Length: 119
Image 1 (cartoon, rainbow, N blue to C red):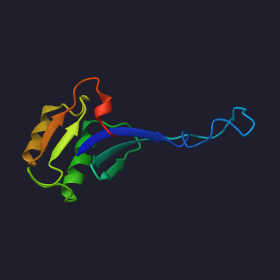
Image 2 (image 1 turned 90 degrees about the vertical axis):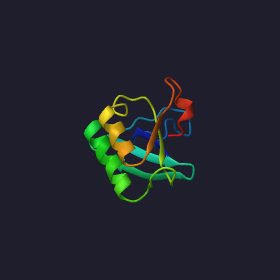
Image 3 (image 1 turned 180 degrees about the vertical axis):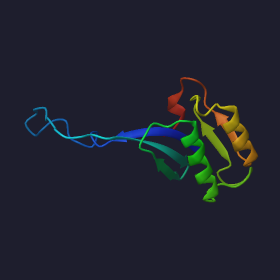
């Protein structure tokens, strides 16, 4: 199970150039929405959206909600190995204790290796 934060905005869904090759201009409000995505080998299992940036409390709340929704089982069960990047909110010792107490095995990706993370 891969776990990571990502953010999308509604601006990236728009075309940049018109049919004549001229650059298009847009007016309006573009909102950036941060998400926490849980991705397995079969695709995205669940995603959580927040209106603000992610901090440790929101990250732990998303993990607890995902675990409580019976998506995971204890090691060596389904979705019991979580692969995270080395972000500071992931490396907190309290979060690691919580994940291990839930029967999960957290594994961290090497630094500067974003190509290992499918999210």
